[in-house]
Image (cartoon, rainbow, N blue to C red; front, side, top):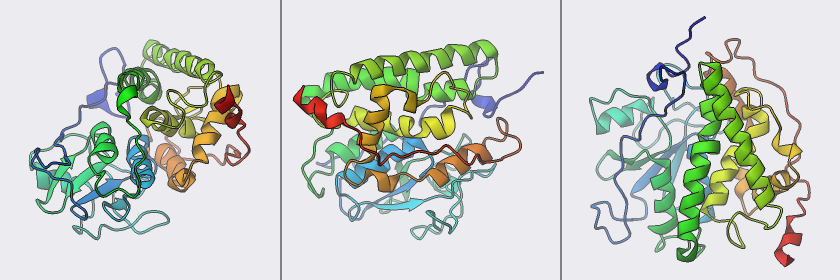
Length: 316
C-alpha cells in the first residue's frame, strides 16, 4: 500500500520527511540596525502549547521575564486543513491583537502569495502589521540576546564562552533528536523510519552518558541547548514513544535523562509552560494519517515533580 504521508509536499521519494524551510527570517535587534528595533509592546508571539518549536520560545520569554514586553496568544491545539485556529478554550484564546480567525491570515497579510504549511511560532510586528519571523531558532535567540534592555533579569542562556559548543550540540540534536522524532514519525517507508528512529536512540544514549558526568549538557546552569533538549524529552513518553513509533526505550528508562528531565521541568516557572492536554490532543487528533481514529491515549502516568537528585552532580 502506498501512502503520501502526513505532509506530502515534505516527503521525499525515499519516504523521508524533509521539513520545509522557514519563510520569514527578519531579525529584531537591540540597536535597531535590522530595521526592527527591540521595543516594549511592539511585538507579539503567536504560539501553540503543543508544538515543541513554539515551546522553546514560550520558555525563553518566561525565563527572561519578558511577559510584559512581548505579548502572546495561544492557538487551539487541534489543527485541521485550514491550519492553526484562534479559539477560546482551556489554555487557548481568540486573537485580540488582529482579530484573526486563523494564523494563516497573518501569513497572507505578510505575503499574499504564501502557499506552504502554516507553522508556529510566529513573531508579529504590531507596528508594521507583518510577520518578523517564523523561525523558532531565530526567535529564541532574539529573546535571549536582543531584549536585554527590557528583560526582567540578566540571565544569559547563550554565554559567549560556550557559544561554539552550544551551536555544535544544537545542530547535532536538531538532526538526530528534535527533528529526528518527526523524521521517524512521518516516514512513509520502513527504511526511512528505521534510519531516523535508530538515530534518535543513538542520540539519547550519548546524552544519557554525558549527563552521568554533569548536571546539564554544557554549563553549570541550564543553557539554550538544555531547553532545546527539554521540549523534545518532555513530549517523548506521552507522544513520540507511541505515536511516532520511537519505542526502543522511554525517557523514564534512562537513569540520567529521566532525572535531567525532572530537573528542567522543576526549574523556575517552566512547569507552567507544559500543557499535556494540548500536547496529546494536538498530535493524536491532528495527525490523522498516523492515527485515523483520533483517539487520545489516557496515559502515561508521570511524576515530573518527583525528586530528581541531580544536584549531587554540582559537587562532582
